[in-house]
Amino acid sequence: MHTASRHVRSGPFRFLYILQPQSPLWTTRFLFLRRLGTPVSGLLLQCSMLQECAPTSIFSPIPGSDIAQHTPKYSAKMTVVGVGNVGMACAQTMLSENLLNELALVDVQEDKLRGEMLDLQHSAAFLPRIKIVADTDYRITSDSDICIITAGARQQEGESRLDLLDRNIGLFRKIIPELVRHSPNTILLIVANPVDILAYASWQLSGLPPNRVIGTGTNLDSSRLRFLIADKFDVSAQNVHGFIAGEHGDTSVLLWSILTVANVPVLNLCDKNGDKYNKETLAEFHKGVVNSAYEVIKLKGYTSWAIGYSVASLVKSLLRDQRSVHPVSVLANAFYGIDQKVYLSLPSKLGRAGVLGIANLPITDDEREELQHSAKTIWDTLEKLKI
Image (cartoon, rainbow, N blue to C red; front, side):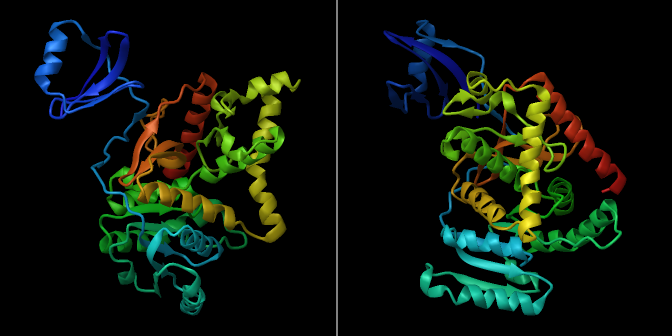
């Protein structure tokens, strides 16, 4: 359907609206007019009361996306593959957020799988009515709205990172086709690490459009950033806005240029407080954000609850078509000068169809170059793996 973007001048009002010939819709801060006939808009054009202008967009869809109208869901069927610490934290947080009416758990360890299922089922009196099933057979995942994959091989002593990646991809060759066979309309949400590599592999193995294959990426990294900034300035983390983008790993990119506290740029606040940050100081702060995960692992042996809440926030945005913006791992070529077909984290609008668009942010040239370097690092690994 053709859409025209136009400026309207009428008396004291001057505003921008989107006009659709089939069902025109005008919106302003002062005025809301619906179902104006196309002859009216034509008359306004002839009278020079309405002028066409170039369309503008905050978000751009991923090339190859299959985005259609979807009805928001307030409760749905979820599958979690892998019932380790992370998988069960994801299950528990989604249950506490009342996002499910059916939960399917899949793992290869039958006893642990049944034990986790029973443990959750025994909480039935404290939760809304929900069906919880578990099996090693993927048939129980049939018609899942979202499939969350936390399963991954454990690194063995003396095993290289590439060898571990090879084994994880071998595992995904078994998991992904089974999930898609039983739930062809599902959204795949990849949690297992290295998430960018495994999200790319899942896209290749699934045959799904890229908007329906998403990695958790730097969503949790960005939450850690917001926590540390909030702690420094003594405000709620919900009043800190900003993202870590790129690889979920060593080449991630902290987008300082758009990081704000109460809509005030953080770097401006630092200047006023006498903290004259140079590049080295900023890099040290970024390193502290990345290393915060390692501190948790050192103290308790693993991370679980924060990633569980991160996943629940993504699931809520997807299911309920909230169109919230999250830094998640997506197919990134054609954005920010990235040439390679890689998955890495970019601020993305999420809704019922998956990734609805990538935010076109006014980042600096240095940040853009860092994103391109992050993409090349991931691409080099993909070439070695020959996925």
